[in-house]
Image (cartoon, rainbow, N blue to C red; front, top):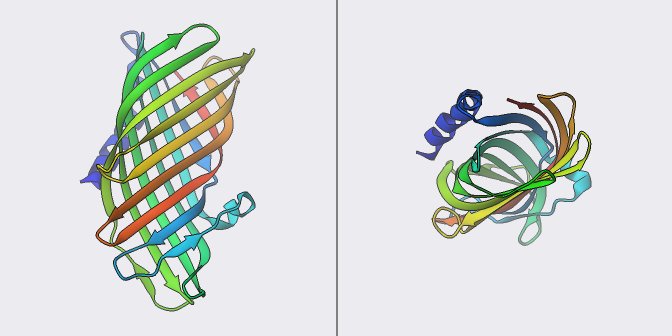
Amino acid sequence: MARHLLAAAALTIATALPAAAQDGWSGQITPYVWASGLGGKLTPFSGAPTLSLDKSFSEVMEDLDGAFFLSGYARRDRFVVLGDFSYSSSSKDGRIPPGYPARGKLSQRSLTLAAGYRAIFDDGMSLDVLAGARAWNVKSTISVAGGAAQASPGKDFVDPILALRANVALAPRWSAIFYADAGGFGVGSDRTFQIVATANYQVNDNLYVSAGYRQLNVDYRSGGTRMDVTMAGPLLGVTWRF
């Protein structure tokens, strides 16, 4: 079910937000390239080995198989809505007890949708308070000593989340956006959180370019499957405002 929700809501982000420019709405949509690395622990299914993954910043590009991130945002007066869709696939070498070499791979698709209220609204800063949900489709694989690969079926689940989003003016044409959410609470995963921070340069009235950092974490345990992993790395984006 979560897989169908991911596809339908991603289409909503891409097609419905431009209509928000009518009736007093304003909005923006931003595609990002995300250089996501991988760290944490993977146990694909009951009885499978657990692979520990250590990620350093210098290894981000080595780990990355592919990733992108699409963010949408719309506001009318103090009511705000946002969504983001991300895909990433990362691989990492590690070891399993008693020291055998292994390779783990995690592929994830996640969709976050939230709505809320602009609590602070002035020329220099705005702060939005939101609540919503994050739907996941994840698959993990472990290959031990270059031998037979062991893979779990894809896992679909949905987490409730609470979020904050701040936009801070830094200088003419320059701004910063800070976003953070947390959730899970045992409903879908035990825990999930996301942080995004970007510096943004205004090219013209409708176009911005951004550079920053994103970290996305999930701690999921069910039926012998455990994924306590962090996907993190720098990102580059282009924003169209309307």
